[in-house]
Image (cartoon, rainbow, N blue to C red; front, side, top):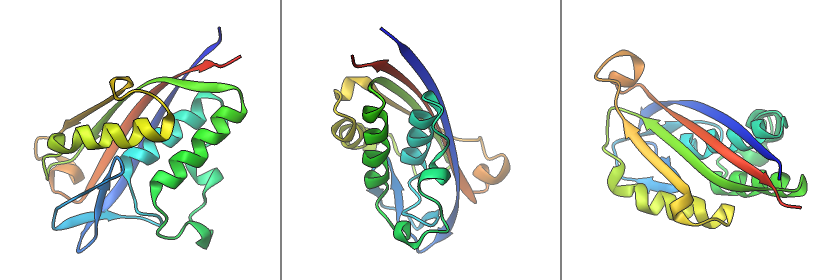
Length: 160
């Protein structure tokens, strides 16, 4: 069996009056992420990890922010389309380990819903999706609540 690993990272600014989507879940907060799509930093990092595992470029290559087709698109759709590319290459997800770094709000109470959303799209068990959260201890743009970042490590296995 052939295995491939990938790593994804994504950053977004935070702004007042925007929805905060993380891991396919709308999290109540006075600030939300700014982006061309719904700016779901975690799903974008996972997309990049999946694409990177098979050397298929990055999320911007497949879903450019210059294309209005993707304006305000639900990132769950982007993840599903990315996973379809992975399946076309003959691979499936074994597991994902992800971290989200933001100062506020606290998100771990939403992690079960995030894990369920991601697992459903990728046709895996919720036990195969790990989501962790951390802060920047009030340092830098994350500590000042100007932005957030997500990291994702993925393991793929050839299906055939």
